Length: 486
Image (cartoon, rainbow, N blue to C red; front, side, top):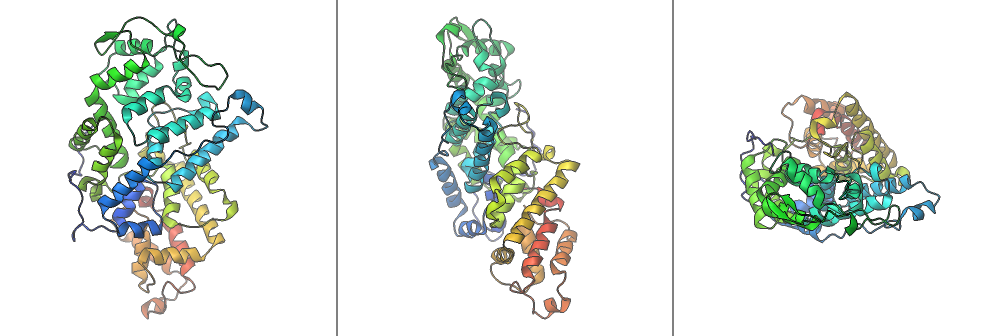
């Protein structure tokens, strides 16, 4: 694991306790929901402010632990003949399930944030295995194990049909061993590049992983075939025996627990806190992981409740992914859209257009994120998409723009500077350093309203122009650089 200790966030893992100088406020609530989930509706923010941070985080983690996986579609366990018996292209089923993933992310919080995270860790690409049923079964495992036991997760995902096809486990036989999955099991899934394993460990591991080659129907379940298993002794991490798949997982977690804990906790840190890693914090989280036998929930409770997580130096350090820049924005707005808008399909298509096609990362190493999300082309596409979404919301119901303004400021107000700044701050990860963009936003917000109306108190959020003013401010806001950060 390559880390650096140059993080400027030196706050501890002590539990964050609000006080007068470090209050529990909208900014912290939005920070929490944008990292643990996909934003928060105005009502969610209000409800959160009436809870302590620790109680809210316990509720979010318990919710994730208790949430059942999304029910299987009718075709969730079909084989190829079943799909061929319908007039639909199998691609349409895969697309529909990606739309379902959007719905799950919009509806839920931490469980589905973690589902997205793990889809970029235990990577498969649906185009490689084609089967919609395999796609669902893989997604189901991501949800099922998202906040469970990492060892069990690692064991189950390696035997999923999607993974057996994607990383060639299905082709791995005693007469023709394939090292692909053995290599990625160590390099990408558990230990990190060149961390605690050798090429010989990979070779011997691939022999132990042979035999998962039996499939009686195309796109059907893949099971173990003893005739294709290498039934001789193998040496893995210095341990000698006639090891099989289960032995590989047990030996890995018994012989390399420290490396696994640090690698996974480092990924948690980079994803949930900052791309610049504080090694001391990661080491403490890794110890918690080890002390709890690789249960994920205790690590996340410790991290999310901490002063470190809520330190302002962790705000605005990630560039929003295509998922975040779309779903978070609409979750934060709480807007209604016309019935024919096909929200899930539009967001899925937007993710694909902006470089994050769901359940199809760029390669086995996954999306690298942050700076990779934005270039001269995708930034303008972001502006255009969000601008169009806001316009559709405007055409559907203008009054909801007044409502979001009132919700953010806590009711009506005739203080135009306060209203404009509050709306902008609500959608930013932290206050702007320069006043220039606040001033620009204020001028856009005040446009077409006579100045004396602001000066004499005539104007307030009940004024007939207020919805269009909020609309114009949002259209400005989505184009400032700081909006792209979370």
